[in-house]
Image 1 (cartoon, rainbow, N blue to C red):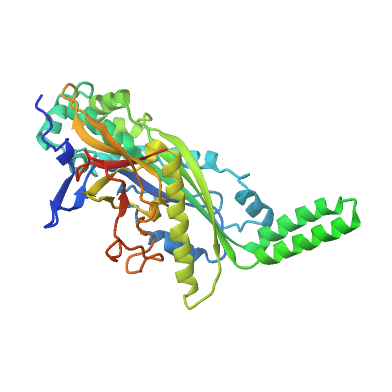
Image 2 (cartoon, rainbow, N blue to C red):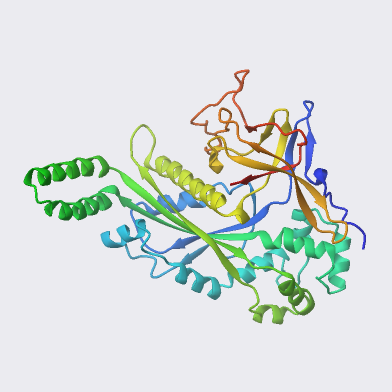
Length: 409
């Protein structure tokens, strides 16, 4: 079998070289992602929050993987949470994982992810156009592999499965919007019970006074609570073999198949405080807080789960820069590996070879935490006084534009 004609070395990442020898508009193999909203309860300003979610800028470090399921409703989707339920949710005592997985099965989310990968048509037929586009594969080679009805030992199909399909994720996000006073009052009341048990009268009075001061400081405004569950599509050689040999040309068999699954990677919760002040509207304030809330969730999921960490291309090498920044949780000092993209001549599969390690320059972290048309909150400038538009890293001798950066612990 001929080698893949897609570019699988350093120049696998395609771009346009400017007069300053900087590469722009990189195309590289990203993980794929679908984002699903959980409609589980009613709350104040729900319409504003849902509108903000619908307008949330999709994370550009992933390919948007569209499926028909955009929202799942758990319970009635209309019952407002009471105080006890809100406190339990914020404290992490409430977990709807079982309900989510029931919805995953009923709505066949995993099967929809696979159907999207193979561009399934209304009459049940598959093709490899999306895989060719995202993986930079040669169409004729994929056609030959499919025609042979083999997955094991066929470099292009095996590589596509490992590099693309196996890196398909879906998030389920639940929001709750509530007055801070609800949680503050509960915390105060619980603490007051403990204060009543202080044997010393003076100590008891001091403790109650401190609790009241703390309550008054925290009761104003609102909070937006979110929790996101991250799942990954399971794809391996045995599943691929069944798909290519038994399901590819048999729409009915695909429809009745139950081999496609999602596996839980992890979950992340985040609470953002909202104060309605200044000259911005309520909608603008909630939207900004919600975008920041979701960004923080993604940054934590990426930090905690290696499989979900995005790779980003090296933009320039002197200085070493990349289009990643505060939106992805960078503060300065984080460590990254510089990876060269190569191809295993024996298997035809993509390999990532480390050519060095680097760290984020603490003084030159790009603030990309803003929506289109807005200015960054923190305007960081380079030595020449120009606003920076990419994060700077410590230089690596072997680094080349188009190599990839991946964060390490």
